[in-house]
Image 1 (cartoon, rainbow, N blue to C red):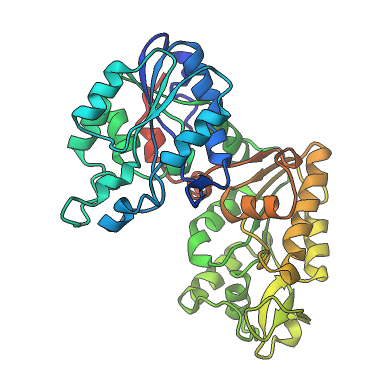
Image 2 (image 1 turned 180 degrees about the vertical axis):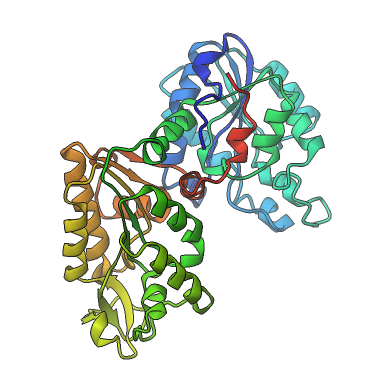
Length: 411
C-alpha cells in the first residue's frame, strides 16, 4: 500500500487550533505506575509540536481490552497513571489534565476551559465497549457513528499518531477521521509509513526476511507476500515445526498447527528457492527453563520439544544475511523469556546490529521481536528502525489496507 499522499502535520496549519490526537498509550501498569513508558514517548514529537503552536490538545487512547464492568470499576485499566507519566516526560510547561470520562457534557466543558498549549487526556476509549448494564456493545471497537461524531465534534483537526491501532477500524481513529473536516497523520505514523515502505517499495537488495514466532496461521499472508518481495525468507521460531512436519519429519512434541500442514506444503513449493528453515534445535522434555539438548531435524526430535534454534541454523542464517541490503525481522527464534533458550534470538540481534553498522537497512516489525531485542540488552540505535505496531506493520508488509490510515485526508 502507498500512503505517501496522506496529509501530514507539515501539510496543515494547526496554530491555536483545537486538535484531537489518537495516540497509543497501551502501556503496562503495575500498582498504579507505568512500568514501560516507550509508547508514551513515541508520539512526544507530535505532542510537543502542537504545544509549541499553542494548540488545545485532546488525547485519546485505549488501554488493554474492556470486557466487563469490573474492568472499569477496578481502575486497573484507567489511563490515570499515564497522565502522570506524560506530565513527567514533557519538557514544555504544559498542564496535563486527566478526565475519568471520555464523553458527555463534562468533556465538552473541559475542552472549552482548556488553555492554549495544554493537554486533556480522556479516559480509556474502550470503556465504551461495555454499557452500564455490563453488556458488551463495542461502540469503540465497532466504530459506532454516534460516538465517532461526538469525539469529532470536540476539535477542529484530527491527528492520527497511533500506528499500533492503524489496522483496526475503531471510532477513535477511522470514526473521527470520517467525521471531521481536517485530518492528518502525526510524526510517529509518518515515520512508520516511510520506513515500512523501504521494505515494500523499491528496497535495497538483497532483501532478506526473518520470520519467527509461534504460528504459521498468523504469518501466512505475510510469508506469501514476502516471497514476492524478498530474495530469501528465513523461518525459525515455533512455526518452523509445522513446516518440517509438512516434509514428514519427526518434530517430537514441538508446537504444531496440524490444520496448517497443507498450507505449509504449498508455501514450501512456492518458495522452494527462497525459503531457508532452521534445521537444528535446542530441545527439552517439557516447556521449562532447564538446559536443553541439541538435535538435528534429520535425526528426529524423538518426543522432545524444540525451544530454540541451534548453531547450525544460526550459521546458515548468517551466510544468507551476509551481503543483505534490507532486512525485515518479525518473531523471535525461540523462547527468549527462558535463559536457556535465548541464544538464537540473541544471535539474530547481533547479526542485524552488525549489518546496520555496515549500512544495511534493518527493520524490526514490532511485537515480540522488539520486546526480545530490548530484553536481551539491545538498543533502538542498534537497528535502522523498530516499528511500534506489531499487527499493523505485519499487515502493511503483507499488502493489506490499514483503515486508520485510509481514512486520513489526502494531500
